View: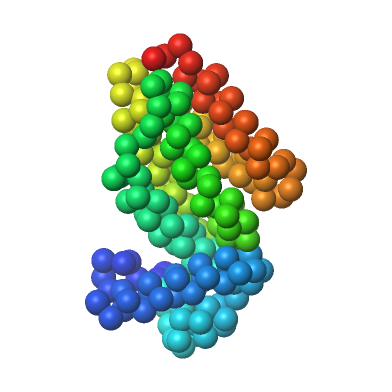
Length: 196
């Protein structure tokens, strides 16, 4: 299996085709979840040859991990223009977590597909998985301003694990949306109350 080319090495037309492939996978995941994303169906939806899909993504998990990176980028751009709301650090961080969670709540099939790709052992997906895992660092940074650097890092890591865990529990129908929100709020309060 060959390693797919890096995004920076692609021509403008190749970048556009690659983007169509990601958008097709995203749409299929939104319609039917993880199992609905089959490479042949992705190719048909994107109007490209099956070989083209494999040129850019060696597996479904790599493709879905890239789709999550794409979704995360869109969310990050939206959040950039809207400062986090709240009078305390806990409230501002919770505001971020809720803004990140609600779009997935409206698309449970998509959430299930993205979460499954995040747990894949596929080595080609690992780079995208790391990128998704690091997104909270950049966005929550302002809300944690003033805390010692080591504390900020620990808090971000713990919140990332909590967020992922409660989403996974919700996707697997072990908790409902209200409980998910409650656990996110509790985690912010326990980690950040008393820190300003």
